[in-house]
Amino acid sequence: MQLRSLGLALLASACMADAATAQAVVEKYGPLQNAVDVPRPYAIPLPPNANPRPQWEVGTRYWWSEGSTSFDIDSSRLDPTLYGSPTSTLTYDGVTGNSLEFFMSVRNETDTFFKGFIGGGWLGGGSLDDEDFFAGQVKFSDTYSEIDGEGSFYLTLDVGQDFDVGYSGNLVISPFVGFNYWQESIDAYGARCNRDDVGGAFCGPAGSTAVPFGTKVINNKSMWSSLRLGTEVTARLFDRVTFRGDAAILPAAYLLNDDSHYLRSDLGPTPNIDDSGTGWGYQLEGELKIDVDDNWTLGAGVRYWYAETGGISEFIESRTEVDLQDFTSERFGVFGNVSYRFSTF
Image 1 (tube, one colour):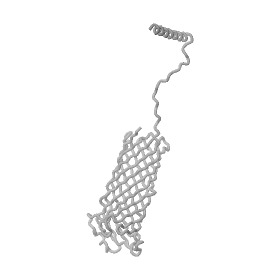
Image 2: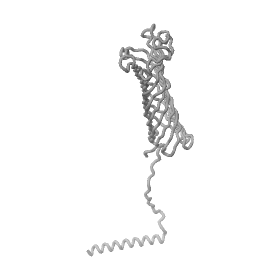
Image 3: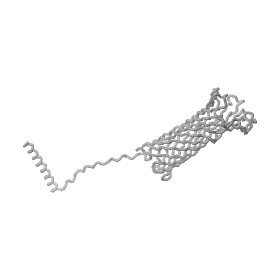
């Protein structure tokens, strides 16, 4: 115990001696000039995000449109002395559509994006003109039917890359590659005879009703599956107003079309004619968008779709193939949408 007390006394004396020595040095030479400042801890800021635009956008859209589908069936290679070229021409015209869509887009920090939409709705209105020809293009039948019913379904998926071409991000060009599926099913009712070249020998006098308009006579269901190659352009026009344009070529558009002739028992059960072919087309879209606030956006624009092909028509019951010519589908309309934008960082 005495030894411990002695040790503590000596340590205290040494500390007081060191303190006294340090104080003497300071009084004689002044404070130390090379003192080291220990840095205080501080928060390390995160690097800025490479993409200042919102990463996500989701919304809904209403599309009103009017469209047409037309095609020729050429059976002349079966018997050129009997069948005309084309043999039958069907034109579905003035078919109005009312569609609802869900759309979205997502972008990462490297400005790579994925966007798409899915929609569908109701088709109605318009007319079907069905013309049939003998050799020498002698029209032996021409009928008018009313379009009433069925609908559409479509899907578009794209992936691409944003390129800021200047003006502080107010002009962005975004090439993309994608896929589009476009289906329309149309019901036609009744048949009224139009003027033909044989005095109504097959249908009846011009203006007469061959089939009551409450009777379904035909359904046409066209299904396009297409590759999309295109570019989207986004340009900020004013503080809260942005223009968005989207143009895509369809270099490969595959068609599968089902025809159901309900009153033609000689053609077998429906669908009794299958059409197929690979063609091309294009799709255009333009929109003005207004930012309500940092998240909500309202938009309105126009859209046009077109696709065409030739190919083969197969009469399923008889397994007979003839030529499909000039099959075209088109649809043009206006749309309005509302969307919500947000970021995940």
